[in-house]
Image 1 (tube, one colour):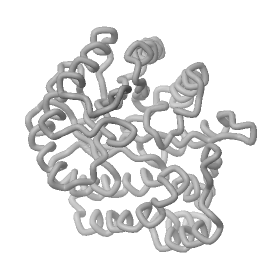
Image 2 (image 1 turned 135 degrees about the vertical axis):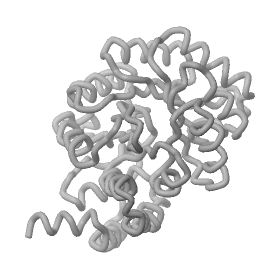
Image 3 (image 1 turned 120 degrees about the vertical axis):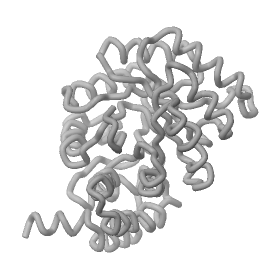
Image 4 (image 1 turned 60 degrees about the vertical axis):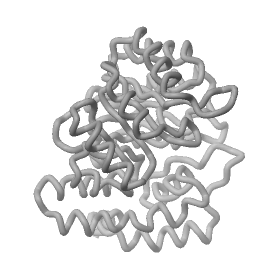
Length: 304
């Protein structure tokens, strides 16, 4: 990963009418992620918004293979290996290594028999996987799908020699600030947050954020403005994340982002059933909002 701030971008998974991955659409989206979103790293089947959990293990592996193939060396790829069974996670890590991925992304899991894992549980889980792969680990914290990891436990995990990156989804400024100091600035690992926290993360010394498209396209402009010292412009761009996607999040992140991609002329399919896409009235409201943002303004200027 570069030392300058950057984005870790997970492409959305497009499904066809037969509920299979539409690889032609995925290829087009990955070109967009690499070329227009300027991904510093691409995620292969690693975050919940990618809907990989609806796939069989064999289909998940094929999604990983195709993602690596379509990126074609234009950016590093981190392969999602998250699974409650550490043996399955290791199997996926071996695939990542065979494909010459740059790292693996691993969600801190809940205990399958209930209750939050202890710090010792988490460390043991990550150490068990680290013993079986030489690839660096991107530590992924997302309470709900995964465990609710305390700040002290996050710091302990970041100290593991195999953990080189930390991505967490709290959107909690107090937590973000503390972890930037105790993880990134302490030299343990690079620290990444979310689209809503991107600019403050950069200002406090974090490495960037993880987000799917089309948020990543807007985020790339924020990173560029920040690196250029154009802080007012970076703040103007960041303000566009105040309503998007938050205003539509009651429908879920994936339906909202897939609707946005369709509005922007980059169709990425609909959410995997039985989960519904945005209803027409909410999609129209999203369209009207996107028309006020740089995502739509730039698109309209390019076609003028």
